[in-house]
Image 1 (cartoon, rainbow, N blue to C red):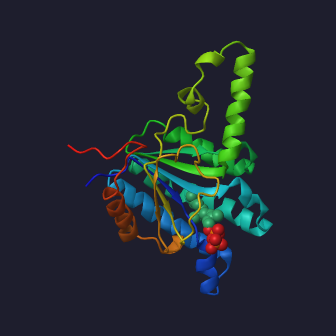
Image 2: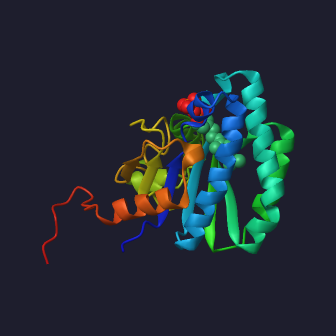
Length: 236
Ligand code: FPP
């Protein structure tokens, strides 16, 4: 079975999952963390080298303060409680997004885990935090323009490969498969450039209910897709 090298997940539906059960939104996110652990295990079991999860978008700051604080707390707890597991499984942790705007304690835990795991190679788990594709492009432009002022950029030879080196994802392959849960057909400002040729798999399952079997289902779906990258089908 042809497997994706990089899977990126838009983990949607925590709020609806909780509301339907008469629970608070934060309880939905708590169950969402369990689904994150299952997805990481599934990715490890299937030897997927890159897994990226959209945990907090730049637009999520507009949610009620208690929900934002609750999400940050869950992230801290996840990093602390999973430290041994991440190290045992040789998970390299990294982040994308404007991390400098997160609470200082969250930044410290993240930085420490990124450093501790930087030489691991079983899987790269990237957590998108305070992430927005539009901001990613703005940040790329800022550095690029500064470097241009310093005479380091040759405008005539500028191409997409050059631009890619300024994105947060500079050391990641493009996602082969994007999974979105809860039945919404949107990319929500997530990896917009990087997903130019990604296969997109939308499942109606709410993120807290996403199991190993759903992960496997997404892999099977992917293996049947015919990826042409703008080309015509190759007949051998
Ligand atoms: C979308 O569901 C989910 C989020 C905005 C947050 C995702 C966060 C987690 C799964 C937990 C924290 C992550 C880690 C890595 C520990 P929603 O709240 O928008 O759902 P709704 O559309 O049903 O309201």
